[in-house]
Length: 330
Image (tube, rainbow, N blue to C red):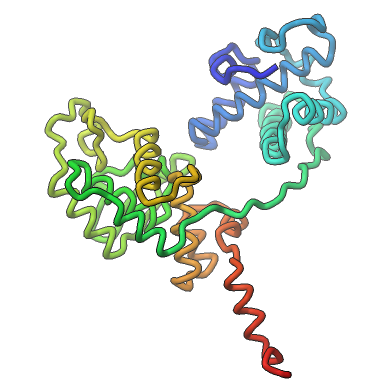
């Protein structure tokens, strides 16, 4: 029943899905990863619709169902009941949790909103009353201040990539930038204590650098060698791989995992995104940064997204209870 993502993202999609994808790319400026996720969700949805509506024999291999023949007549007949049937299918047969189902609902809402309001293919939007499953807010995993310092101290100073890797970890832990943002940094976009990066949705945003970031960037620039970079547009890349290319996300993921293990963080939970959590948590707990400022620093479109970084740990709860003026009364 499970399918290869590549078989969905590279297949021939319905014409209306292609139009929607073009809209997301050219008008909304959505990232490549976001668009691919939408294509996967809609590919799964229309395969289900063809099976559910009896448009293919029941014994047809789900992965082999072709969807490029889905036309406006099929789309116009999709109802709220069909959508709930699809969500039931993803839960019971795809083992999707509430987070995964919520993402699929967001995809469907966006797609049918486009069909109704922009393409004007349908007269009524069947997703208007489609409810999103309740999800439990997950506490972000992050490093404590001591663990963060230990991580930075775990690097081998004799390594040829020491200055580069130390700079990478420093930027993650101080600025809370995304993995894709770090990989996109260009030398020409660094100006004193200001850094301009390509953020989510291909939007440029400003990152302010503290003393530690400026120092580690300057230290790395002294040993950075771009002379062997053959791809012209990558010569300006701040972080260069051993293959003399702009460093890619997988390389950064692996080096973060390596140094986390060296620092004794061996539970495999520490990824670049966890370092982003760490930066946000440290700023909130130790820097008295307010939620709106943190939202701007992290590049969040909505402040509600930032709320997950402002969790209160057990020590804070203990101190809050102890601060009660009645706590000393015997």
